[in-house]
Length: 121
Image (cartoon, rainbow, N blue to C red; front, side, top):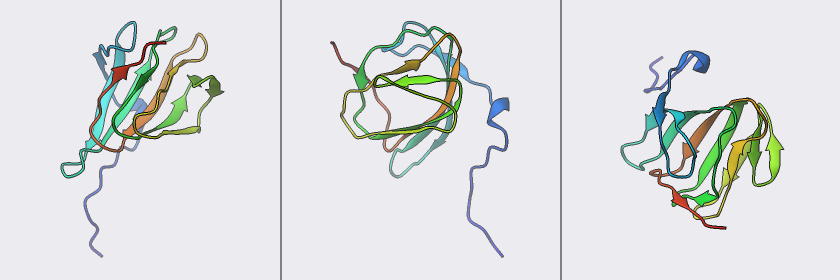
């Protein structure tokens, strides 16, 4: 049997991220692009938030989905943990940051090209 192309990462714990400063965070976060679709612009990222990260409300042009792998994440005033799924429609105001003193690791799946716009309170 012949199978099509697949991007397979057997152990996300071993994937290194690179520090990146994004305008809605008070310091660098760990980011690793896992997949980018050349047709739709969809982007999949492994994200590592450091403990105590400060964040601002923001929005994205594309819808996006978060799947929490490790730690606890505060998402729009709801605390979620490993195995949690969060989906945001395009253009909606959202907030996500570590919920407590620990780091957070999650997948961030943008359903189109990623961008970010801070939203003032």
